[in-house]
Length: 175
Length: 95
Image 1 (cartoon, rainbow over the protein chains, first blue to last red):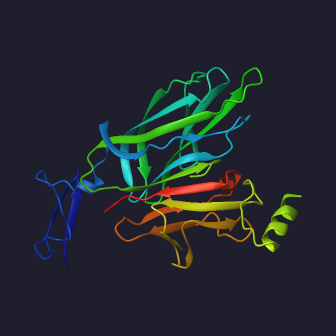
Image 2 (image 1 turned 90 degrees about the horizontal axis):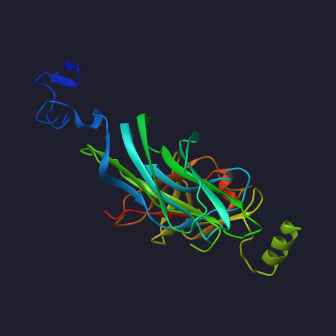
Image 3 (image 1 turned 120 degrees about the vertical axis):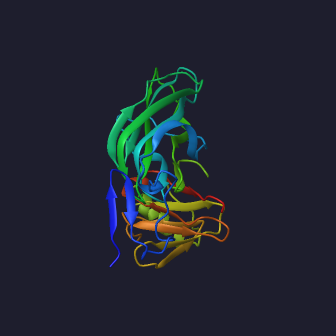
């Protein structure tokens, strides 16, 4: 009966276990259970531009990053937001994790892309979990501008065990 | 009224989507196109992108697996909220 001992991030095991079963680094840490650390290292991206609608609430998610494997720790999320036509709507986005309501962006009525940065900490995500963006526009003076987001990206260090992703957009137009 | 228009179009063989809502039609697409989509839990084939689904017949709130040679399998789900927009597109990652 093989004996596996995990203590303080260290692992020891008897010689009866094939070495292929457990892979660990030079510090005898198991990479896949080490937490991710927010950084500026790009790991996941969904760069296409998606438009939202004028609404009083957040109608639905427009951009998703679905994880192929779980992750824990902290990650840095960045995305760009703007109003599609200058001064015609106030665009606001919100970053959610698995439908848990998250951080609102700084409202903008400019058609110049504004980059938002959010650090998410104490994450404990599993495969098929997602991080998603929703948005809404508030009309100004009867304008027809729409909120837009793009460059939805996740950054962190320690991707020794690659997480991988599938990104999904929801749009009104032909995609 | 929207349902009636859709039914008339279907009778005429014109399968075009209406604007998405809880009773509407959703186009599921991918980049690249031609990916097979399956129910993740049981593996049942759902369709090959692009294809159209309706909220009342499609298995919403269930994980889907999208697969195409040369790309990593992906996973996502179709939620009822997605029918508020007529198009959903999954971007696959090359192996």
